Length: 384
Picture 1 (cartoon, rainbow, N blue to C red):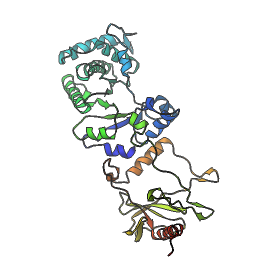
Picture 2 (picture 1 turned 90 degrees about the vertical axis):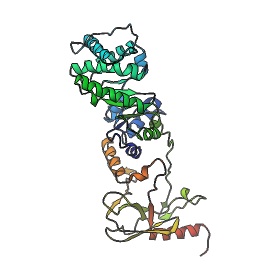
Picture 3 (picture 1 turned 180 degrees about the vertical axis):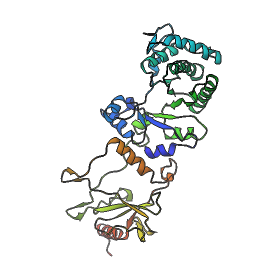
Picture 4 (picture 1 turned 120 degrees about the vertical axis):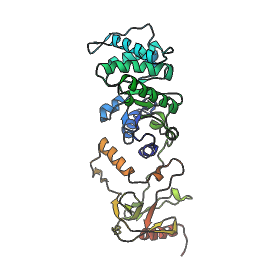
């Protein structure tokens, strides 16, 4: 997820963030909590209130269409007040201002009432869903009316969410309106945030970033929490050694065979910025040495050898569990997020492309290759 997120940050809005919105679509009794927890490694916020409470994840949410549609244009707010201000009078005043500046003949009055009620209970987290009736003819103007009213009594409105339609076009139009009213009324509404949802996935994000847009927040729900692009983890654990004897699984497909013997894994850098390859060797081999020539081999094609001179080496295979006891202290969610982001930054973007990514090389020591080849011949009943 984090790799996809870094890849999705196009040149048009480098400051965009992502929030996990998938709670209601999660699968299984723990799906929502575990999904929200581990999504935080790649996302900046969650809409899951309980996950925020348990794991101290920053929370970000808006409102539902059902909340807005539950109000009627003849309905009155329970109270006219917000912090001892006559909030309804302030809203009516700003309604007249906005209606004089823009063509608001199609604005929905019940939507304005819903936004006003939401502002009374969430004045510090005022971000409105504006597409229940019509984004550009109703929602954006009703939002501005209430946002101006909050700003007048020293609250800072956050922005809007759009959940349908041509997201690129609509966000650009809304940004133009924010810039326009900022100039006309001398308010900092050019800084308001624009959030988009509606079955957002990597393909849609890439499409939106192909051209100019003003999207600040991607709210990703179903496609994130249910892992629709990869609903099952494409790897398994295999036994490689027991009682000092190798365990070898041979199959008709190289990718399904295991790599026997206890091993060490090192990440090798030939410069100080990006990882060059991962290097696998036997557990008791001498580790690669900085600034000394190292030969690495493609285990499935021994003629493909790579000679490298490591400038930086990281050991990546560590024993964490022995005789029923943990040997490490597990990272909290913030340390895990920081670690994940740091690791992702060690790789070139070409490895994270959604179309034709460049494979990251995982190669082997010459010694391991010889031992593996001997074991392969022995188990294949091939006489030398």
